[in-house]
Image (cartoon, rainbow over the protein chains, first blue to last red):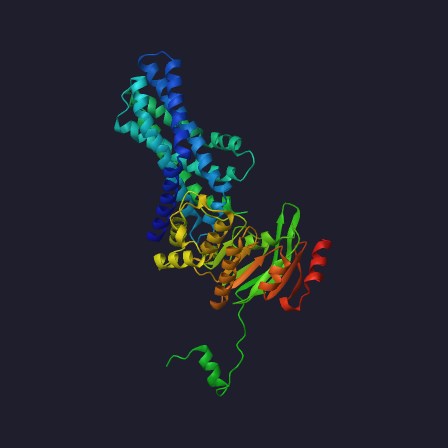
Length: 223
Length: 253
């Protein structure tokens, strides 16, 4: 157990150090997210509940698309340079490698969200600094990163990976996208009646897909 | 009193040495690999022994790299079994990986990390016990000790290949797989490779390498295998082979 955690932390350390030096993922993801939020803000001129609903939608469009961009790049960069095979040669459980890559991706997407959310709050004039909203954001991102990491590895070995990744991810991610947007809208409009149902759905999805992704990763990476 | 198997044999034979049967380091049985309908490897049987240096020759597409990838557990055979240092690849792949070092066409290094950071990363992944001294030893061995803090992306192809060789032997593997290790090597790199091959022999490590350079293969290996259309058609001691004859045979393919 402890050895597994050590290995996960080494993989995360390597990904973070590489990203700090290159800024290849973060820069693109952040600009994409902020640009989407700004575009939506100027496209719709709404007030009250409509503003909160469209704001929730804009926020998740921005984060999901930035996530697609980051996930695809994070794996394909490593595949193209051949270093992914080097990682697979290491004498560690392949599930450990999945968890290391997943946590790295989760950190990158979360960081983009943490910096974009205040910009979103300022532009849409919405109170986003609520613990429940941060919880919904975290649960939505967790499911996205779990499924996304697995599918990005699958898509990375194909020629049309940029097209394939969103096509593969969309149907599987649909429940998490719907639940995230609904939960965020309810929190922003302060209608908390059905909120627990959506958060429970997100939590269940996360546990299920994290477990599935961990279990099948070995088969996905082997020829 | 505890008596080792070797000592028991000596006692049983009245003190005279009894030849101990050699245990293969690598045992391949009826190994086949198909990609869709195309057979790449066809029912290969092979044994490699500790301390052996084996050159695997063959034309492009003969299945050399596929065989190496199966031994490295990067690819799963369609049928047959592979055992390395007593571990079956399909059952205990993790244990097999700890016994195998690989140098491939790509260096398997991170360009944005320094030479030392790369080795530290892999040392931790392989749970190398004496991490710091082993990294120093490897950097010295591959002649990159003065470039330890430089990013790998700034290295020439030859230097990256040298570091890749160092990465492959970092955990003292029982089996070293080299896929065309001589390609892209500068003069210093060739010297490093020679040193590493010598080091593997002193530690009883097995080396299996593919190469297109016949002279290099025949001069460095003890044994030569020739792969044609996924089958081993020649398995002979290197000194018994004639370079020109072998060259002609390879050119015919």
